[in-house]
Image (tube, rainbow, N blue to C red; front, side, top):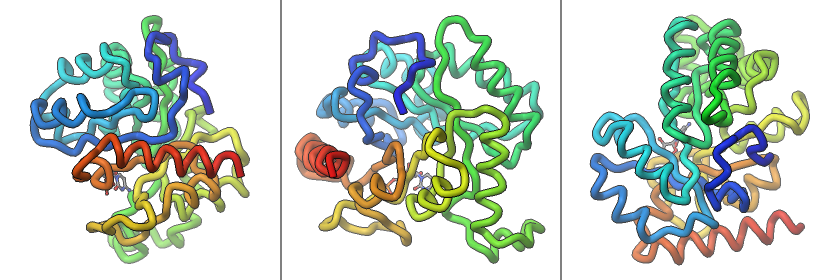
Length: 250
Ligand code: C5P
């Protein structure tokens, strides 16, 4: 899926639509920028999550969006519809490429978020929703009163996301095929938990290689440590990019 809705087309990376989103899991701007300076915006986008955003703030996000990198602002908004809508407007104004909310916030909340993004005249990022966090399992779902089986709950929340008119969902690559079968090919599927065949598993338990994730139906791959902790991050990015390019030809 290309980001047709994004009006800020000055980002070279958007024209290339790279599939890799590098997770900037750093506690400060200096460390994050040290990594970013080694990366190539034609090969990847960048993800800023709660830790880095809380430490470095919106000005840091704008530093990234004013460079050539597309930015996924991963703040997973979940609140009353009015608050989420206003947060989405503020986030969109930073010039980001993508942002997200929790599908568990409900249809009305997601529709309010979408309307806020659609009404924004300066920048219209892709808007996606988290279904069930991959850190959760059947037991943790049951603990919060959800008795449905996990896969059905993921499908239910992804269907609701589609109904609200959002662009896609964050999910495990292992759920991508099921979502494609049930919901078609329009939804953008953003998948973390990616590890190249020879990489360390770290603390991820259900991992998929970049090529397999794309084959299962993923649109974009969130990758952190295999790139950020590599002795040569650009080389690691280039190798994964080449694997992705090969996979999309087959
Ligand atoms: O280093 P690694 O590749 O495991 O980083 C994965 C990134 O994706 C991290 O930023 C993590 O917070 C994020 N993520 C995840 N699993 C999810 C959702 C997000 O690993 N279900």
